[in-house]
Image (cartoon, rainbow, N blue to C red; front, side, top):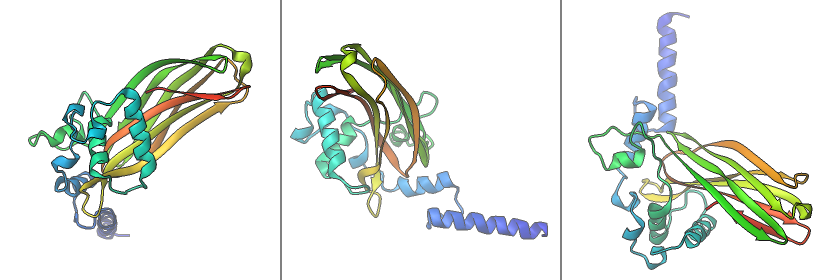
Amino acid sequence: MKRSETIGLVVIGYALLCFFIFSFSGIASAEESHKILLEKPIQSPIKPIEPQQTTFDKNKKLSEREIQERFSEIDASYDLHEPFSPEDAEFIRAYATIPITSSTPSYMESLDSPDESFTFTGSNSKSFDRYKSSNGVSLNFYGRIYSDINIFTHSYRGNVKSKIYRGSSKVREIKNVITNTAYGLVGSSGTYVGIVYKGSIVSSSNDARTSWSTDETRKYGAVGVLYTHTNAYSKITTTTGTFTLYAF
């Protein structure tokens, strides 16, 4: 095949790829196309706010437990790509995690800095150390969870451990679960916030009695991710019942 024909095929292939990804983006690169897609819809209703800036009563002055209950309620109430109500969108803007990176501004940070170039990468991690006693068993659940956002492919990770320090003879199963929900642009014009991904990592043992460790990463694909909420919990099954201990 002649070189000119080879180049022609490459150009055609690239053009088709860009068309199917973003039909309006012409010959722009993937990142430029993504910028074009998101640049116009970015309005104040989907920018992050501080919890004290919330206007709906159900989002004001929430305890840590109430915040987690609201996340669970919202995640269970909507299908993928279904726009949130104004009060639920406000809650996500106030309490969900924004990607942070020390080397370059995050996507959301760049929205408030017009002179900065758009970036679509960011990461967050948070450690925890929790205790709970139930059904004659005492549990220490600790570790760190991670969330990483890129342009199209993202990931979350849990490096966690459930340690039984009393009542191990009553333990029948130890289960570690890491959950992740990604919130992003939805709607025909991309002007609303909704769930764009929801998943979990589950690791369990029927044999372990004193401890169970999990260190696993899960990758997922989604366009226009703005916020994430990553959590973890340990579920202990005993001879007399079960109980759960959340990281956050």
